[in-house]
Length: 270
Image 1 (cartoon, rainbow, N blue to C red):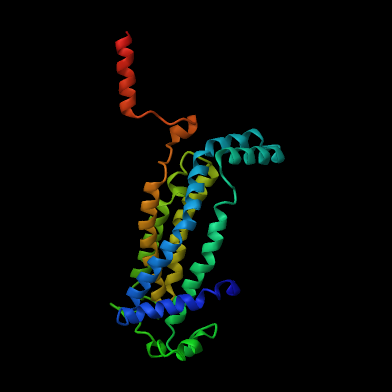
Image 2: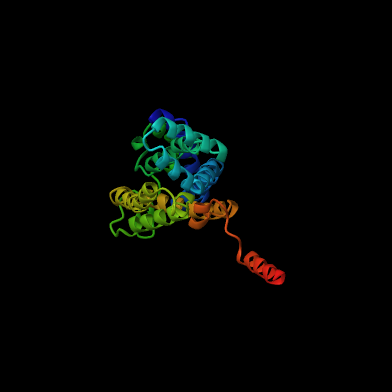
């Protein structure tokens, strides 16, 4: 995957170094600002994924019914599912393409953080250490000031506070995503898998950050917090998620005020 991220590496490293100098050698502030910028630039790629996930959650009862009806005829089942996706305006692979575009960018950012936390320019990968060391603008910045609060950002956090925060913020971000908030009442297997991932993924990220540089844990926490804020505003812009009863009937439930008005009109007719 290195050949995919190489074009983004110089941009990420130079941006980190620029903000590091701008904020008076404060690596955490430079990391926070660049993380926010990168995550905001990813929003146009996130929206199609979010909308696709919401639509798929809405048609889960129909999907479940088709799979049950054509359980013994996989070809017919696939044909009917594709027809259903087309009617609902869903591309089965539509949500995957933005993810594939995001991955190299986020991975390059991740690798850039590892590299700028190197103790000397020669420790940087991809030959960028030589490029930075020969740069008049950044040669005096390496090695970076990697101390923040009680942390040395180039070494693991021995207090385990950061891995715990990584797990919690990762879990909270997943809770806000449409795939988890609209999974109830749909495919039982998908629901079980979603609930399992909601626990295992945050724990996996926490485990990863136990033995890696604490600067990476800080990045994960900042990225998750920015992601939570972005997800909150995206959720406000998306149509409300259908409740299980609404999905089962395929029709939205009438609001209480509408039900009251209907009851009054029936009483007047009597």
